[in-house]
Amino acid sequence: MSRHNPIVSRRHFLATVAGSGISTALLRSSPLLTGLLYARSAEAQGLMPTRTVAIYVPGGGIHDFWAPSGQGAQMQLGPMSQGYEPVKTECNFLLNMGHNAAGHGRLPLLLKAGWNGDSYDVAMGKALGPDLPFTYVNLGVHSNGQGYLTKVGNTDVPFEDNPFNAFRLLFGNTGPGSEKTPILDAHAAAVQSIRQKLAGYEVQRMDEHLDAIAATQRRLDDMAGGSSCAGLPDDEEFPLTHETFSRQARLQADIAVAALRCNLTSSVSIGFGNHQAEFRVPELSYQGIYHQSHHGGSNGLPDYPYYTEMRRHLGSLSAYLIAGLRDAGILDSTVVLETTDMGHADLHGNSDVPFMLAGGGGRLRRGQGTPANGYDQHDLLHTAGLACGVTLPYGREIPGVLLG
Image (tube, rainbow, N blue to C red; front, top):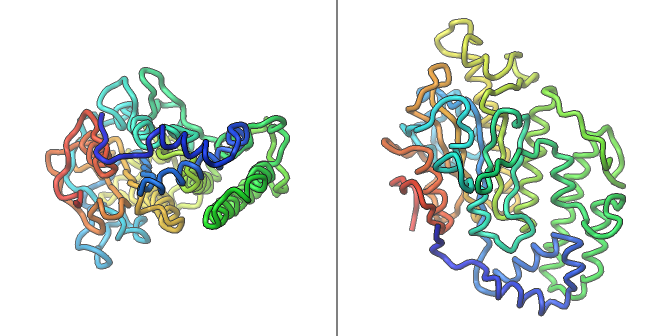
């Protein structure tokens, strides 16, 4: 694996840390400060940190119900892709693509070329942000129990399905007494202690980060039953049920955006369910599990109304994450890919697989569908990597996607 464009060198980053006047002990206590100094180092070299997000949506889609027509704001989405409407001009819908490992049980083959080796999210984190507090962040929503997307070498890494755990891991203070210290207060204290050493725009940026964390923590507190922002339970896990599937998904997306915006990581993956699609979304018309909507859940109707409704909803969750990146001002510096494990789920098909890319600023063509006959999920990864300046050792570039 190689990278075409320069990134923040470790030597330059360490020099930035040394020249900041901020102690290493304080940096260890708050990863937000590390992220801020990483951004300072990148800007000093005329660079912006490059980010990537890999989204997993199970169950594929039906080409005729998913494929868009037209371009830009006039693009017409299908009944399965209608959920992307708010961000369609940010997306490149890849058409007619194949899958060399279609079907259930193929999660380990979606973000890498084989059963072993670093997955895309890990490899990209190592390439883009080796000095950031977290090499990668892998989140999920009812995603554990049927294989894993993320792998480090030959070791599977479970999804972090609990947003409370994810929030504490990413934004919790790691210094003495951190288990009992309110998350926001801990970071605010760290920032206040070095505020005079920051440039004016850095103070503003850090304040914005703290505001974003406070907003996310308020949402976590609301889910926990209205507890105050004074802290979260140390050991008690929030009961993550199907009744709150969509709320969990949006909250995990908020956490992903905050982690990227605060330069805690350069690489995030998020799974909306697992390969057996063992979840349901109670606010929809269809009340069964998603898997059953593919196979018999439509009562023999040829237009698969329940499969269509569920897939459209999952697309809206991806769109929520993309919109969050856009609203945070980092979508142009983030390449988003959405992967899945098959085409037509009732057939476990390996053709007409609904893949998608989004964001990327001037690197990706957006607001269109791109024919990609003869290409598969590994080419999707390769193309996303190239958009970030990284050459992955598998796959090919999909023509008509990249600019420049």
